[in-house]
Every structure is written in C-alpha cells, then in structure tokens.
Length: 130
Image (tube, rainbow, N blue to C red):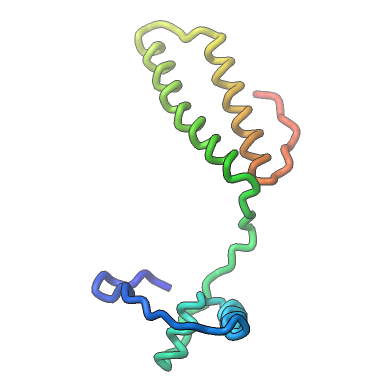
C-alpha cells in the first residue's frame, strides 16, 4: 500500500477492546488476506475494499542475538575511521604498516563470522584470497 499523502496520514488512534478470541480471529483473517490488522479492521469498519495484499518476507530470518549485532554495529562504525586513517597515510606518500593492514583484515573477518553467528547462519568455509 502506498504511503498516504501528508494530508491523508492516519494520526488519530481509536482505541477498541476485543476478547483474546476476537483478536485471534481478526489477526488470522488479516494474515490470510495478506494485510495488516489495522488495514483489515479499517476496511471492515468503513465498508471499503481491502488494500492489496502485502508481499510476505519468506526469506527474512529472525535475529538470533541482538546484543551481538549491536556490538558488531559499533565495530563497523570504527572501520570507517580506520580506513580513513590508512588512506591518509597512503595519500601522504607513505604506506601503512603491514601489521595494521593485517589487523584490519582480521577484524573484518571476525566481524563477518560474528555477524553470521548472531544471525544464526552457519559460517561457510573461508575461501582463500585471490
């Protein structure tokens, strides 16, 4: 469903109460129709047709370890700074120490392995660098 224009945005909630059974019935019906619960109830209450079904994200995997992913995001943020420093050294006519380049590569490999584990994806055997 396309995002409503500013003047048509829905910003006024209307609280309603349902029994657990009613909620489950509505949720199941909305899911079967491929729409959100809000869209389903709105269409029924206003005697409007249902909006087009939204595509299901069949390939979407749940996050296995949110804390680990947060830690990885912090590490990824530091990479930009490190790469910038290495580029600065290279642009000044020097070449970064080999040790620093190997440390950066090892950090990136660690982040990849950790990210795969945090997402619950089996780590594939590493392929040799070209």
